[in-house]
Image (cartoon, rainbow, N blue to C red; front, side, top):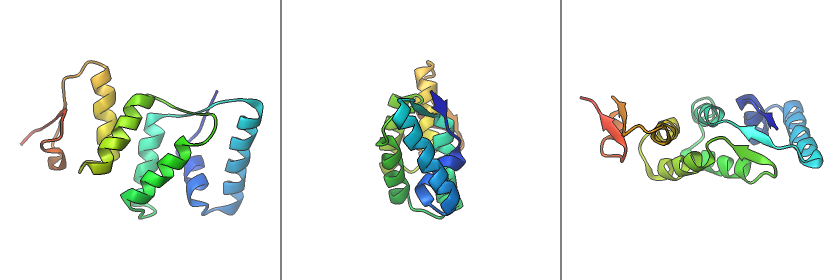
Length: 132
């Protein structure tokens, strides 16, 4: 199994650097051809969403399409896959950042009763306690 950095996924989704895009595509094709899986860590996914929204100005809807494309690639393994998929679902209709939902779900799987934050956008969201 191999793991990829955020910049590989950014190139794959944005195609903004043609040479790097082709190299990224070739990497995934080579892995698929030899049956090697590619891990996308939860941290890399959080960073990817942040980069696409902040640096590229993409809407949540476009970022969600990109995440679905990545998940649909052969041989992709998501770290904490159940938590990440649930976080994607919650982020779709939620007011918090994608990373908030990922962190909340991973910490819940570690036995935490809630995720404490000052982020008022998460007021009333299940599993979050907003300090005032």
